[in-house]
Length: 419
Ligand SMILES: Cc1ncc(COP(=O)(O)O)c(C=O)c1O
Image (cartoon, rainbow, N blue to C red):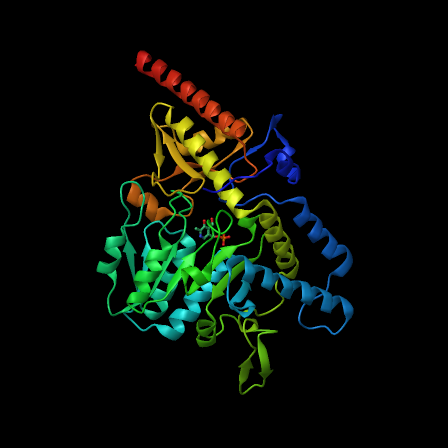
C-alpha cells in the first residue's frame, strides 16, 4: 500500500495562475490533459536564462554558450533518469509529442518499411499518433491496422494477435487515452509485440506526469512525450529510442549541428542524439523542462498517483449521481481524466456555461475523431485533474453541471408544455 504525503495547499502557492479570478470567480482549472500550469521555479528559470545566461548551445566557445550547453545536456540526463533510460544519448529533444511521432514515422517508415507493410494502432489514439502514419501511408504505401476497444474503453488485447502478420513493422499505442483515461496494458502489448519480433512505440503524453515510467523495465523501443503536459514550458518534447534504433534510423531534418562534415558531394551526420536535433533547439524550454521534472520529483510520483486517483474516484462518484450523465471510459485502470455528456446537452453549451463559473474544461473531439466515431458521438466534455486540484474544486464542477442541467431541463419542460 502506497503512503501519500501531499500538502496541496502549499503546492497551489507554487502555481501563481491558480489564484486568479475568472469573471470574478476563482479559477477552477480542469484542463490539465491539454496542458498543465507552471510552477514558479519553472517560470523563474526561464526568466533567469533570458536575463543572465542566454546563448546558443553546442556552437560557442565562450563562457555563456558553454553554460547553456551544460545546462541543456544536464536536462538530457535529468530526462534519462526520469524514465530510466540506459544512456542520455537515447533522449532526443523535439518540439513536442507530435513532432516526436512525426520524426519516428518519417525515419522509421523511410528506412524500415516497404509498400504493403503494416503498422498497428489502437482506435483510441490521438490524431498525433494517426496522421503521421497516414502521411507515410501516402508516401510509401504502408497499411494501418486498428485495435478496437471494449464497451468500457479498454483495448481488446486478444485482437492484437489477430492483427499481427508477417508484414507488421511496428505497434504504436498510447499509454493513457486522452479521452477515456484508460491506462493501457503497454507492458503486455510490448511483450506480445516482441514475441513476434515487432518493435513497440509508446505515446506517453498522458502518462509520464502521472505515474512512474521505466523504459528499461517496459522494454519499449520508442517513447514520446511533451514538456508542457509535465508542468514545463511549451515547445519541448522527447523522443526516447533504444540506441540501436537511433543508430539505424536516418535523420528527420537536416541543418546545423546534426552533421560532422558537409561538402556539396556528401554529408556525414553527428553522433547520437545530435543527428536528430537539426538547428537551434528550444534550449530555454529544455532547461526549464529540467526544472519541471525536479518539481515533479519533489512532489513525488507515488504521491501524485495516489492523490490523483482519489480525485478521480471522488469526481466519478459525484458526477455519476447526476441523472442522465454518462461517463465515457469506465475501465478499472483509469487516469485522472473524465469525459462525459449529460442527456442531450451539447458539449459545447456545457463547456461555455461551465466557463461562466470560472471552470476550465475541454470540449469537442479532443483530437481523437476515430475514437468519437467508435463511440457514436462527436464530442464530450472533459475534466482532467492534476495534483494541484482539490475536492472542493470538484464540488464546484459538480454543482455547476447540476445547475446547468436543471436550466436545460426547465427550458425543455417549457418547450414541451408550449407545443
Ligand atoms: C495521447 C496524446 N498524444 C499526443 C498528444 C500531442 O501532444 P502535443 O500537442 O504536445 O504534441 C496529446 C495531446 O493532447 C495526447 O494527449
